[in-house]
Image 1: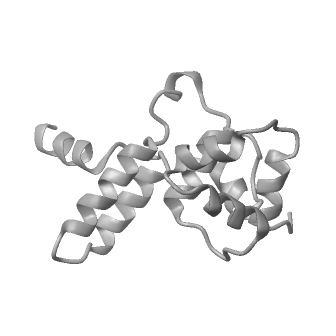
Image 2: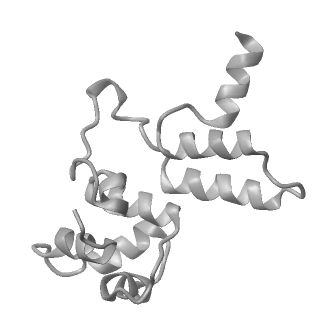
Length: 134
């Protein structure tokens, strides 16, 4: 459990054939050089959007990928398998919305966003809509 993010990423890529770095870069919306930096350990941190995208790409548990804790492989209940985590595009769109705002996010908005990213709740807009209609 004391492995680093770099070691866990290398573990996932040990038996993969050629071309996966370019494919992963496209999936994450980064350059191939960024993948090389993650594998070399040059980057000391990783953005959450990239972490979730990598976990999605390899179908592993994001918590395991980030910390080494918990099960390695994502176990998704059959009835939730379509909408557990937002897609990378949805996440990037949400961050664009947040950064375009002039005021800072409140603590409760940050928590809602984190829970949405973790796949534990519906999107913040859906949550607000259900409160209005419910």
